[in-house]
Image (cartoon, rainbow, N blue to C red; front, side):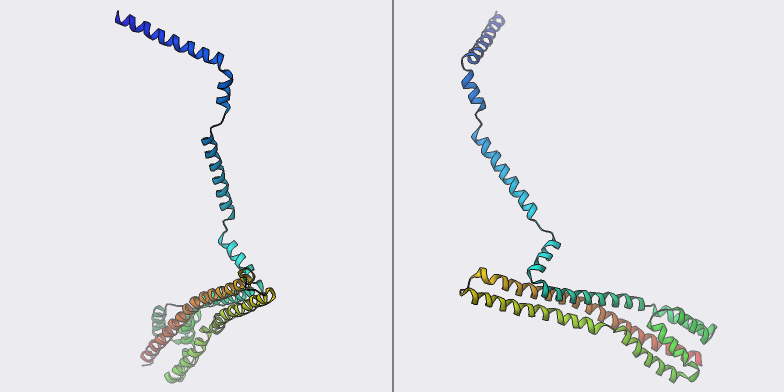
Length: 273
């Protein structure tokens, strides 16, 4: 009985809901359509905000410059005339640096291994075999040994004098070009400072023409002054780092030449006996 009563009650509720829905659809078509077609103000605001944010993000991405573009823009804004001279100092300086690095790396040899081969050659094949080893080995150490062996028949004193004299020649070859690199190291900031002075002169000329100190008027000249100075200092720093590396490399090779020459003279004196 209770189940039957519950079933009747459920049927009545559903019927009442269907009747209300039908009545609403028949009598309230216009208001319903108006409500449906009227957009929600909060949704519109949210969509507009998202659209503005997306456009702003696209503008930021479009305006974002690469490192190359930034350097190009600063190069042009810093007066291409003065910036070109600084750039040429960097190019010529780096060209000399690369040439010296290649030369010094090719001049580096395993002196201990070379001395062992020279000792074995003098004991087994004599001076001619030792000369052949020196001719087949690159580097200043082998060249010094060869010059010493050329004077071997004249005695150890002549050998020592020949080694000392030719060692000075090889040292000069190792240091070749370093003076030019030091010149560009000093020249780059000087050119930057020259651009600074000329930029400040241009700024004061604009002040004089305007008759008033306006930041907009003098900003261009001051910017030229600062950019040329910065680029000159950056070039000098880069070349100075490479210059110190090259000087250390030359010192290492010179020390190796001196130590190897002393050991070579000991080997010759032992073989002479």
